[in-house]
Image (cartoon, rainbow, N blue to C red):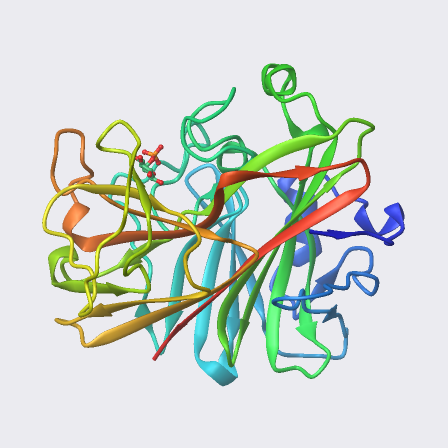
Length: 341
Ligand SMILES: O=P(O)(O)OC[C@H]1O[C@@H](O)[C@H](O)[C@@H](O)[C@@H]1O
Protein backbone atom coordinates (compact mmCIF):
# COMPACT_ATOMS: atom_id res chain seq x y z
CA UNK A 1 0.00 0.00 0.00
CA UNK A 2 1.07 3.53 -0.65
CA UNK A 3 -0.64 6.76 0.15
CA UNK A 4 -1.36 9.49 -2.30
CA UNK A 5 -0.21 13.03 -2.63
CA UNK A 6 -1.98 13.45 -5.95
CA UNK A 7 -4.40 16.34 -6.37
CA UNK A 8 -7.97 15.22 -6.97
CA UNK A 9 -8.07 17.22 -10.19
CA UNK A 10 -5.95 14.54 -11.87
CA UNK A 11 -8.77 12.09 -11.45
CA UNK A 12 -11.54 13.91 -13.25
CA UNK A 13 -13.33 11.42 -15.43
CA UNK A 14 -14.85 12.03 -18.80
CA UNK A 15 -18.28 11.08 -19.90
CA UNK A 16 -20.25 11.50 -23.08
CA UNK A 17 -22.08 9.74 -25.85
CA UNK A 18 -20.66 7.20 -28.25
CA UNK A 19 -20.59 9.78 -31.05
CA UNK A 20 -18.77 12.30 -28.90
CA UNK A 21 -16.36 9.57 -27.96
CA UNK A 22 -15.92 8.60 -31.61
CA UNK A 23 -15.34 12.22 -32.65
CA UNK A 24 -12.80 12.48 -29.96
CA UNK A 25 -10.86 9.35 -30.87
CA UNK A 26 -11.72 8.44 -34.47
CA UNK A 27 -8.57 7.06 -36.06
CA UNK A 28 -6.13 9.36 -34.42
CA UNK A 29 -2.68 9.04 -33.04
CA UNK A 30 -3.55 9.86 -29.47
CA UNK A 31 -6.03 11.50 -27.18
CA UNK A 32 -5.46 12.95 -23.77
CA UNK A 33 -7.98 13.79 -21.14
CA UNK A 34 -6.41 15.50 -18.17
CA UNK A 35 -2.85 14.83 -17.20
CA UNK A 36 -1.11 11.85 -15.70
CA UNK A 37 2.00 13.75 -14.78
CA UNK A 38 1.34 13.34 -11.08
CA UNK A 39 0.66 9.63 -11.23
CA UNK A 40 3.71 8.22 -9.65
CA UNK A 41 4.09 4.65 -8.49
CA UNK A 42 6.48 4.28 -5.65
CA UNK A 43 7.38 0.62 -6.05
CA UNK A 44 6.72 -2.42 -8.16
CA UNK A 45 5.66 -2.02 -11.76
CA UNK A 46 5.56 1.49 -13.18
CA UNK A 47 2.35 3.28 -13.92
CA UNK A 48 3.77 4.65 -17.13
CA UNK A 49 3.44 8.31 -17.95
CA UNK A 50 1.60 8.73 -21.22
CA UNK A 51 2.13 11.73 -23.43
CA UNK A 52 0.03 13.11 -26.21
CA UNK A 53 1.58 14.76 -29.19
CA UNK A 54 -0.71 15.97 -31.92
CA UNK A 55 2.17 15.98 -34.38
CA UNK A 56 2.57 12.24 -33.89
CA UNK A 57 1.12 10.71 -37.03
CA UNK A 58 1.38 7.13 -35.88
CA UNK A 59 -2.00 5.44 -36.09
CA UNK A 60 -2.13 4.10 -32.62
CA UNK A 61 -5.74 3.18 -32.02
CA UNK A 62 -9.00 2.41 -33.75
CA UNK A 63 -12.43 2.70 -32.20
CA UNK A 64 -15.11 0.23 -33.25
CA UNK A 65 -18.19 -1.48 -31.90
CA UNK A 66 -18.65 -5.11 -30.97
CA UNK A 67 -22.31 -5.99 -30.35
CA UNK A 68 -23.63 -3.02 -28.38
CA UNK A 69 -20.26 -2.19 -26.95
CA UNK A 70 -17.45 0.26 -27.67
CA UNK A 71 -14.07 -1.27 -28.30
CA UNK A 72 -10.59 0.18 -28.73
CA UNK A 73 -7.87 -1.58 -30.69
CA UNK A 74 -4.47 -0.32 -29.65
CA UNK A 75 -1.32 -1.09 -31.61
CA UNK A 76 2.37 -1.01 -30.91
CA UNK A 77 3.98 -1.55 -34.29
CA UNK A 78 7.64 -1.71 -33.15
CA UNK A 79 6.92 -4.78 -31.00
CA UNK A 80 4.25 -6.14 -33.36
CA UNK A 81 1.50 -6.19 -30.76
CA UNK A 82 -2.15 -5.34 -30.68
CA UNK A 83 -4.62 -5.33 -27.83
CA UNK A 84 -8.42 -4.99 -27.90
CA UNK A 85 -10.29 -3.53 -24.98
CA UNK A 86 -14.04 -3.31 -24.56
CA UNK A 87 -15.09 -0.40 -22.34
CA UNK A 88 -17.83 -2.54 -20.78
CA UNK A 89 -15.99 -4.19 -17.94
CA UNK A 90 -12.70 -2.65 -19.14
CA UNK A 91 -12.31 -6.13 -20.57
CA UNK A 92 -9.20 -6.88 -22.60
CA UNK A 93 -10.61 -9.36 -25.13
CA UNK A 94 -7.58 -9.96 -27.34
CA UNK A 95 -3.83 -9.61 -27.25
CA UNK A 96 -1.86 -10.49 -30.36
CA UNK A 97 1.89 -10.67 -30.44
CA UNK A 98 3.48 -11.35 -33.81
CA UNK A 99 -0.07 -11.77 -35.17
CA UNK A 100 -0.75 -14.70 -32.81
CA UNK A 101 -3.68 -14.50 -30.39
CA UNK A 102 -2.68 -15.13 -26.77
CA UNK A 103 -6.07 -14.90 -25.02
CA UNK A 104 -9.08 -17.15 -25.21
CA UNK A 105 -12.42 -15.54 -26.02
CA UNK A 106 -15.47 -17.77 -25.73
CA UNK A 107 -17.60 -18.37 -28.80
CA UNK A 108 -20.46 -17.68 -26.41
CA UNK A 109 -19.04 -14.35 -25.22
CA UNK A 110 -21.91 -11.93 -24.69
CA UNK A 111 -21.44 -8.41 -26.08
CA UNK A 112 -24.86 -7.11 -25.12
CA UNK A 113 -23.66 -5.39 -21.97
CA UNK A 114 -25.95 -7.64 -19.89
CA UNK A 115 -23.36 -10.18 -18.73
CA UNK A 116 -19.62 -10.24 -18.11
CA UNK A 117 -17.59 -11.00 -21.23
CA UNK A 118 -16.14 -14.51 -20.99
CA UNK A 119 -12.55 -14.42 -22.09
CA UNK A 120 -9.51 -12.16 -22.23
CA UNK A 121 -9.00 -10.39 -18.88
CA UNK A 122 -12.17 -9.71 -16.92
CA UNK A 123 -11.45 -7.69 -13.78
CA UNK A 124 -12.62 -9.06 -10.44
CA UNK A 125 -13.23 -6.04 -8.20
CA UNK A 126 -14.17 -5.17 -5.49
CA UNK A 127 -14.91 -8.81 -4.77
CA UNK A 128 -13.28 -11.97 -5.99
CA UNK A 129 -15.66 -14.93 -6.35
CA UNK A 130 -18.73 -15.15 -4.16
CA UNK A 131 -16.93 -13.92 -1.03
CA UNK A 132 -18.84 -10.73 -0.20
CA UNK A 133 -22.07 -8.79 -0.66
CA UNK A 134 -21.89 -8.52 -4.46
CA UNK A 135 -22.58 -10.90 -7.33
CA UNK A 136 -19.73 -13.24 -8.32
CA UNK A 137 -16.46 -11.33 -9.03
CA UNK A 138 -17.91 -7.90 -8.25
CA UNK A 139 -19.07 -5.05 -10.46
CA UNK A 140 -15.95 -3.93 -12.37
CA UNK A 141 -16.50 -6.49 -15.13
CA UNK A 142 -20.13 -5.43 -15.68
CA UNK A 143 -19.67 -1.66 -15.49
CA UNK A 144 -19.19 0.87 -18.26
CA UNK A 145 -15.72 2.38 -17.92
CA UNK A 146 -14.57 5.68 -19.46
CA UNK A 147 -11.57 6.35 -21.60
CA UNK A 148 -9.51 8.85 -19.65
CA UNK A 149 -6.32 9.03 -21.63
CA UNK A 150 -4.44 7.45 -24.49
CA UNK A 151 -0.93 8.13 -25.66
CA UNK A 152 2.64 7.02 -25.84
CA UNK A 153 5.29 6.85 -23.14
CA UNK A 154 7.90 9.58 -22.77
CA UNK A 155 10.55 7.46 -24.46
CA UNK A 156 8.00 6.29 -27.08
CA UNK A 157 8.78 2.67 -26.40
CA UNK A 158 5.17 1.83 -25.51
CA UNK A 159 1.61 2.88 -26.25
CA UNK A 160 -1.18 2.75 -23.74
CA UNK A 161 -4.48 3.92 -22.42
CA UNK A 162 -6.15 4.58 -19.11
CA UNK A 163 -9.76 3.74 -18.31
CA UNK A 164 -11.59 4.96 -15.25
CA UNK A 165 -14.57 4.03 -13.12
CA UNK A 166 -15.98 5.58 -9.97
CA UNK A 167 -18.92 5.13 -7.62
CA UNK A 168 -20.77 7.71 -9.78
CA UNK A 169 -20.92 5.11 -12.56
CA UNK A 170 -22.76 2.53 -10.43
CA UNK A 171 -26.49 1.99 -10.22
CA UNK A 172 -28.38 2.36 -6.96
CA UNK A 173 -28.54 -1.40 -6.29
CA UNK A 174 -24.74 -1.68 -6.48
CA UNK A 175 -24.28 1.46 -4.41
CA UNK A 176 -26.49 0.06 -1.67
CA UNK A 177 -24.48 -3.19 -1.63
CA UNK A 178 -21.13 -1.39 -1.76
CA UNK A 179 -21.72 2.15 -0.45
CA UNK A 180 -18.22 3.58 -0.81
CA UNK A 181 -16.72 6.48 -2.74
CA UNK A 182 -13.88 5.37 -4.94
CA UNK A 183 -12.03 6.05 -8.17
CA UNK A 184 -10.50 3.15 -10.06
CA UNK A 185 -8.13 3.52 -12.97
CA UNK A 186 -6.91 0.80 -15.28
CA UNK A 187 -3.83 1.33 -17.40
CA UNK A 188 -3.12 -0.99 -20.32
CA UNK A 189 0.29 -0.69 -21.93
CA UNK A 190 1.79 -2.40 -24.97
CA UNK A 191 5.54 -2.17 -25.28
CA UNK A 192 8.76 -4.05 -25.79
CA UNK A 193 8.31 -5.68 -22.38
CA UNK A 194 4.95 -7.19 -23.37
CA UNK A 195 1.45 -6.41 -22.16
CA UNK A 196 1.18 -4.56 -18.86
CA UNK A 197 -2.04 -4.07 -16.97
CA UNK A 198 -2.15 -1.84 -13.89
CA UNK A 199 -5.20 -1.48 -11.68
CA UNK A 200 -5.35 1.36 -9.18
CA UNK A 201 -8.08 2.30 -6.74
CA UNK A 202 -8.39 5.23 -4.37
CA UNK A 203 -10.70 5.71 -1.42
CA UNK A 204 -12.42 9.07 -2.06
CA UNK A 205 -14.77 8.80 0.90
CA UNK A 206 -14.60 9.37 4.62
CA UNK A 207 -15.04 5.72 5.61
CA UNK A 208 -12.48 2.96 5.20
CA UNK A 209 -13.30 0.11 2.82
CA UNK A 210 -11.93 -3.34 1.97
CA UNK A 211 -11.88 -5.27 -1.26
CA UNK A 212 -10.43 -8.26 -3.05
CA UNK A 213 -9.16 -8.21 -6.60
CA UNK A 214 -7.93 -10.40 -9.49
CA UNK A 215 -6.94 -10.19 -13.14
CA UNK A 216 -9.02 -13.10 -14.45
CA UNK A 217 -6.66 -14.04 -17.33
CA UNK A 218 -8.03 -16.53 -19.84
CA UNK A 219 -4.95 -17.73 -21.76
CA UNK A 220 -5.43 -19.36 -25.12
CA UNK A 221 -3.84 -22.84 -25.08
CA UNK A 222 -3.80 -25.70 -27.56
CA UNK A 223 -5.22 -28.09 -24.95
CA UNK A 224 -5.35 -27.37 -21.24
CA UNK A 225 -4.10 -30.87 -20.38
CA UNK A 226 -0.91 -30.37 -22.38
CA UNK A 227 0.18 -27.34 -20.36
CA UNK A 228 2.51 -27.18 -17.41
CA UNK A 229 2.15 -24.40 -14.88
CA UNK A 230 5.26 -23.29 -13.03
CA UNK A 231 5.48 -21.25 -9.83
CA UNK A 232 2.81 -23.01 -7.79
CA UNK A 233 5.03 -25.80 -6.43
CA UNK A 234 4.57 -26.42 -2.69
CA UNK A 235 2.23 -23.43 -2.36
CA UNK A 236 -0.77 -23.91 -0.03
CA UNK A 237 -4.10 -23.50 -1.76
CA UNK A 238 -7.77 -23.20 -0.99
CA UNK A 239 -9.59 -25.88 -2.96
CA UNK A 240 -12.86 -24.36 -4.16
CA UNK A 241 -13.97 -27.80 -5.33
CA UNK A 242 -13.60 -29.20 -1.81
CA UNK A 243 -15.59 -26.72 0.28
CA UNK A 244 -12.69 -24.28 0.34
CA UNK A 245 -10.48 -26.69 2.30
CA UNK A 246 -6.86 -25.63 2.56
CA UNK A 247 -4.22 -28.00 1.25
CA UNK A 248 -0.46 -27.96 1.86
CA UNK A 249 0.48 -27.71 -1.80
CA UNK A 250 2.18 -30.17 -4.13
CA UNK A 251 5.74 -30.60 -5.27
CA UNK A 252 5.21 -30.77 -9.08
CA UNK A 253 8.83 -30.16 -9.95
CA UNK A 254 8.07 -30.50 -13.62
CA UNK A 255 5.13 -28.12 -13.47
CA UNK A 256 1.50 -28.67 -12.54
CA UNK A 257 -0.62 -30.31 -15.20
CA UNK A 258 -4.43 -30.15 -15.07
CA UNK A 259 -6.04 -33.55 -15.64
CA UNK A 260 -9.39 -32.86 -13.97
CA UNK A 261 -11.49 -29.84 -12.93
CA UNK A 262 -9.33 -27.43 -10.95
CA UNK A 263 -10.49 -24.38 -9.01
CA UNK A 264 -7.84 -23.30 -6.53
CA UNK A 265 -6.73 -20.10 -4.87
CA UNK A 266 -3.02 -20.35 -4.14
CA UNK A 267 -1.84 -17.96 -1.44
CA UNK A 268 1.47 -16.08 -1.37
CA UNK A 269 2.64 -17.19 -4.78
CA UNK A 270 5.96 -16.08 -6.27
CA UNK A 271 6.02 -12.87 -8.31
CA UNK A 272 6.76 -14.81 -11.48
CA UNK A 273 4.59 -17.59 -12.88
CA UNK A 274 4.78 -19.39 -16.22
CA UNK A 275 2.72 -21.61 -18.45
CA UNK A 276 4.42 -23.93 -20.93
CA UNK A 277 2.16 -25.15 -23.73
CA UNK A 278 3.93 -28.27 -24.99
CA UNK A 279 1.87 -28.50 -28.19
CA UNK A 280 2.36 -24.89 -29.23
CA UNK A 281 5.87 -24.84 -27.74
CA UNK A 282 4.89 -21.51 -26.23
CA UNK A 283 5.79 -20.03 -22.87
CA UNK A 284 3.67 -17.36 -21.25
CA UNK A 285 5.31 -15.56 -18.35
CA UNK A 286 3.42 -13.48 -15.82
CA UNK A 287 5.20 -11.06 -13.53
CA UNK A 288 2.95 -9.68 -10.85
CA UNK A 289 3.22 -6.81 -8.40
CA UNK A 290 1.32 -6.31 -5.12
CA UNK A 291 -0.77 -9.36 -6.00
CA UNK A 292 0.16 -12.10 -3.54
CA UNK A 293 -2.31 -14.80 -4.60
CA UNK A 294 -3.12 -16.67 -7.82
CA UNK A 295 -6.22 -18.54 -8.85
CA UNK A 296 -5.94 -21.51 -11.18
CA UNK A 297 -9.15 -22.57 -12.88
CA UNK A 298 -10.46 -24.82 -15.62
CA UNK A 299 -13.85 -26.58 -15.40
CA UNK A 300 -12.58 -29.53 -17.48
CA UNK A 301 -15.88 -30.26 -19.16
CA UNK A 302 -18.04 -30.59 -16.06
CA UNK A 303 -21.64 -29.56 -16.43
CA UNK A 304 -21.98 -25.92 -17.40
CA UNK A 305 -18.45 -25.68 -18.83
CA UNK A 306 -17.85 -23.38 -21.73
CA UNK A 307 -17.78 -25.48 -24.94
CA UNK A 308 -14.25 -24.17 -25.53
CA UNK A 309 -12.97 -25.27 -22.09
CA UNK A 310 -10.06 -27.28 -23.52
CA UNK A 311 -8.71 -24.15 -25.17
CA UNK A 312 -8.24 -21.98 -22.09
CA UNK A 313 -6.31 -21.91 -18.89
CA UNK A 314 -7.15 -19.31 -16.26
CA UNK A 315 -4.21 -18.18 -14.15
CA UNK A 316 -5.32 -15.14 -12.20
CA UNK A 317 -2.99 -12.99 -10.10
CA UNK A 318 -4.92 -11.37 -7.30
CA UNK A 319 -5.21 -10.10 -3.75
CA UNK A 320 -7.78 -12.55 -2.48
CA UNK A 321 -6.93 -14.29 0.77
CA UNK A 322 -6.38 -11.10 2.76
CA UNK A 323 -8.59 -8.24 1.62
CA UNK A 324 -6.93 -4.89 0.97
CA UNK A 325 -8.02 -2.17 3.41
CA UNK A 326 -8.01 1.44 2.28
CA UNK A 327 -8.43 4.35 4.65
CA UNK A 328 -9.85 7.64 3.35
CA UNK A 329 -7.48 9.12 0.77
CA UNK A 330 -5.37 5.97 0.43
CA UNK A 331 -4.64 4.21 -2.86
CA UNK A 332 -3.59 0.73 -3.86
CA UNK A 333 -2.23 -0.63 -7.09
CA UNK A 334 -1.87 -4.18 -8.41
CA UNK A 335 -0.14 -4.89 -11.72
CA UNK A 336 0.90 -7.66 -14.05
CA UNK A 337 3.24 -7.92 -17.00
CA UNK A 338 2.53 -10.73 -19.46
CA UNK A 339 5.25 -11.83 -21.83
CA UNK A 340 5.35 -14.34 -24.63
CA UNK A 341 7.55 -14.83 -27.69
O1 LIG B 1 -18.35 -17.87 -14.57
P1 LIG B 1 -17.62 -16.75 -13.90
O2 LIG B 1 -18.44 -15.99 -12.91
O3 LIG B 1 -16.95 -15.85 -14.90
O4 LIG B 1 -16.48 -17.42 -13.05
C1 LIG B 1 -15.59 -18.30 -13.66
C2 LIG B 1 -14.64 -18.89 -12.62
O5 LIG B 1 -13.78 -17.86 -12.18
C3 LIG B 1 -12.71 -18.33 -11.37
O6 LIG B 1 -11.92 -17.26 -11.01
C4 LIG B 1 -13.28 -18.97 -10.13
O7 LIG B 1 -12.23 -19.48 -9.35
C5 LIG B 1 -14.27 -20.06 -10.52
O8 LIG B 1 -14.87 -20.59 -9.35
C6 LIG B 1 -15.33 -19.53 -11.44
O9 LIG B 1 -16.18 -20.59 -11.85
